[in-house]
Amino acid sequence: MNPSFPRAVARIDLAAITHNAETLRARAGVELMAVLKADAYGHGLIPVARAAIAGGATWLGTALLQEAIALRNAGLTEVRIMAWLTPPGDQYLEAIELDIDLSASSVEAVEEISAIAAIAGRPARVHLEVDTGMTRGGALGAWPEVVAAAAEQVTVGNLVLAGVWSHFARADEPGHPANEAQRNSFEEALTVVKEAGLKPEVRHLSNSAATLVDPNARYDLVRTGIALYGLSPDPRTLGNASKFDLRPAMTLTARLLLVKQVPAGVAVSYGGTSITKRATRVGVVPMGYADGVPRHGSNALAVNFGGKTVSVLGRICMDQFVIDLGPDSTAQAGDEVTLFGGEGPSVDAWAAASGTINYEIVTRLSPRVLREYL
Ligand SMILES: *Cc1c(COP(=O)(O)O)cnc(C)c1O
Image 1 (cartoon, rainbow, N blue to C red):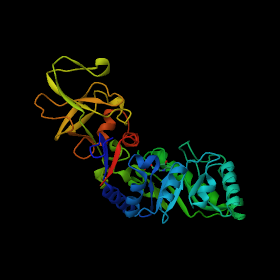
Image 2 (cartoon, helix red, strand yellow):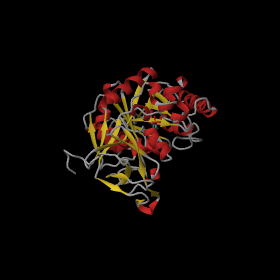
Image 3 (tube, rainbow, N blue to C red):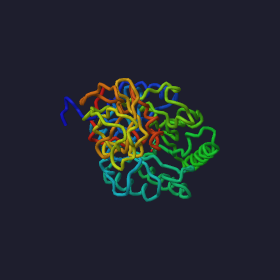
Image 4 (cartoon, rainbow, N blue to C red):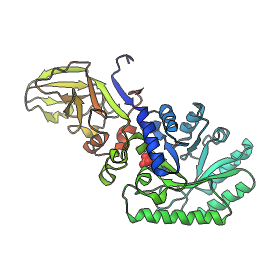
């Protein structure tokens, strides 16, 4: 890649991240965890972490422990960092030594982490996860046993109860009875903890959607991912991000590889799924599904060229796709196209055109797309 003339660039507006963190922090009125899993939803782990901290985030959350370790090793020592997706045998010793908060959903996990803490010679900070209705992570029927196991390890000094937490399945459907049921179930789980003589430092339940629309679920800390990046958890049910004063942080651009004249009636790209209706000029965009452009967006996505919306012709290939620039276009190879964000279509429009959600559009952008920070 020629760094001074890159093929494909995702521009990340760090001021937007900071603004969004400030907005979410003010709205929640409690501590803010910036959720940075999957390379900060494709935006870049470390720069986004710093921007979120500048906006008032006092916690950073990741799925993988390796992401949490990378954050600590980048010198982010002034914040709490939590990783919640750690399989048995994960790097617990390193996590404990780096003061990274862990999660446990089973007696086995509590015991494994506690045994490593005994070796480390300092207690592990653990958040117990309860399944309140998502039926994914978290303890379900075994919750009292998990709490009892944790209480025992707190007593012997292997464990600090840093938190109790759960996760919503349908927070993007405000008013759905499942949300109230999950809140009630969380309250019951907290009662079990209290009766075991334990007091968590923080209780947390809300993702972005709940942070935006459910004041009853905020507890001591909210875990915001998608909203931090300026995207709505679900534009159809909650409205657009702008309604909540959130600014999209990512603009995806590419340089045209080739521009050429084609006649009417020619078949474009693999399978000939698009036939030109008129003579026109087409542009070849050097990005494809290997970069994260969804193949389901074949014949459906649009991009922006020179202030105008132009459509994708035919199938998205691995490394390229074709756009219809129109018969009068003066475009040249090397000119910039905006795929989404900025002057281009919204991430939400891309998600709708390719049958997915905005989360997937930004997260799937591959490492070969250069990230540039504003
Ligand atoms: C991804 C994730 C979040 C953030 O979800 P958003 O909808 O992006 O805000 C919060 N909590 C957990 C456990 C997650 O895995």
